[in-house]
Amino acid sequence: MTRLTHSAPPAAAAAVAAPATPTTPTPAPTPAPTPADLMERLARAADGYYHCFGLIAAQHELTPMQGKVLVLVRQPMPMRALAGLLGCDASNVTGLVDRLEARSLVRRAPDPTDRRIKTVRLTDRGEAVVREIDTRMLDHLPGLERLGEEGRRALLDLLDRALPGVQPG
Image (tube, rainbow, N blue to C red; front, side, top):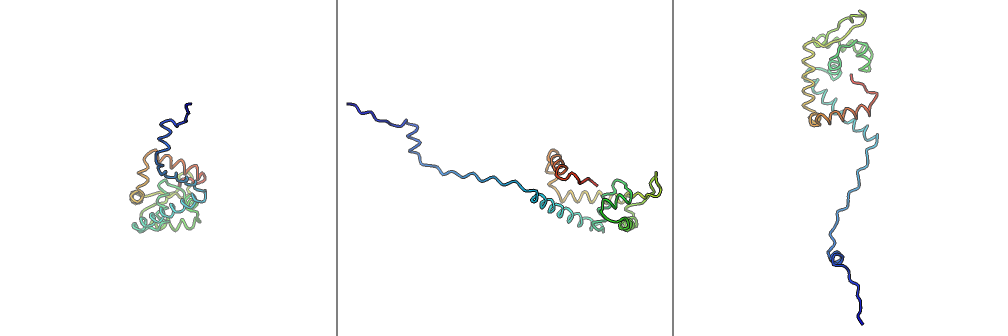
């Protein structure tokens, strides 16, 4: 009588006989940042930006607030609007503008439609200082250039969606 034996197919036998290779466990996915994490990162980024801005403004013998005024009045604006953007009283803006005007960086002019309104605008010297501040800031923020066009568009879109109430100055 012939005895039938069951044997594994050759491929299966080879798989059983092959030594087990160690597998690297797949790392757990990084949890998504919470809104609080993003808020903290934005705060750190803003702190770093304004620290750098303050140092560059100081090289032009400007306080950070004076530098901010210069940047904001690239587009001429009424004193009251400037006070609103700076979040301060109009009397504080008067002092800031007085000091910048004494250095020939800005000038005040009556609004053509309402002479009671004073509009602040950069002088040629003020424009040169703002260009220098911009250039130096970009030197200190090379990552913005490295993003490329599409990356910068995407970042701007994300910032607009995440901070819809924040309007450019």
